[in-house]
Image (cartoon, rainbow, N blue to C red):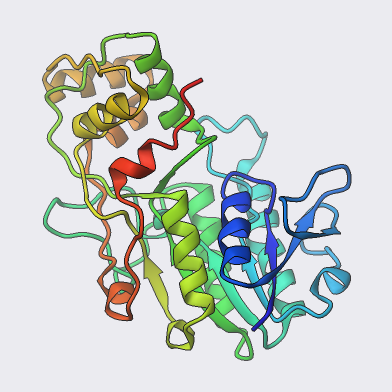
Amino acid sequence: MKTVLVTGATGFAGPTVCAVLAARGFRVVAAVRAGRTAPPGTEPRIIGDIGPDTDWTEALAEVDGVVHLAARAHVLSDPAPDPALLYDRINRDGTLRLAAQAGNRRFIFISSVKVNGEFTADDKPFTALDPFDPQDPYGRSKLAAEQGLRRLSELKLTVLRPPLIHGPGAKGNLERVRMLLKRRIPIPLGAVKNLRSLIGLANLADAVGFCLTHDSTIGHTFLLRDDENVSVPELFRKMGRALGTPALLIPVPVGLLRLAGTLTGRRATIRRLTGSLTVDDGPLRALGWKPPVSLDEGLKALSPK
């Protein structure tokens, strides 16, 4: 395999994935929208909106494999009138349209741990064999895409389910925490005792490159993580050290936090911050992959701006 099409090349993970693949010797073709600048070292090919009618013919020309990153991302309090329709159109129908046109090519699909669910017991991480339990339209659209892809018998498919991804440009809760740390605002999560798996952009990109060069990964689904699981307070301490702004953590009882979340309409957010979600990455490690960048090193890439 020499030439790889990367969708979502200008998104959060795209530039890092493109850079890692180029460094591994791939010719990288970047699917971009008109007016967007493709990542350095890639060959841009223009596409329109991603959905059930997208024509990928030109983008797939002379391409040996596909890394499908493009998706409508999960957001809290999605402002769309009917988020489920948009998630399905882009994440399910758009994915299956691309895969159908890809034929028997190598296909790496970046799914999400949300296919598994939202929470785990500390001693029982999610595996690829666990029952599906997506809790929101985003997770359900990713599951539907996975199921549709597996019905395409010619496709040389590998599915990767990352947990929370951190790196430069991270949005959502990680960006909110970064701003709290920057402003030296106390964070009332010092008493939380949970475990979370995360993965840095560099490690996700390395796993993509590994799968493209190891046929033993074809036909499998893998969960990924950094080299360690951490509690939310320890994650914030690590972020503070990486950014040079020590975390000010206050030990508020978890029960009180959850009550406050219920009263303020932020129950789901508090549950995510206080609950555990870990994954078992043993199957991919057994094939020879391991994350090249430690969690501490990866967090240093967070923007200090």
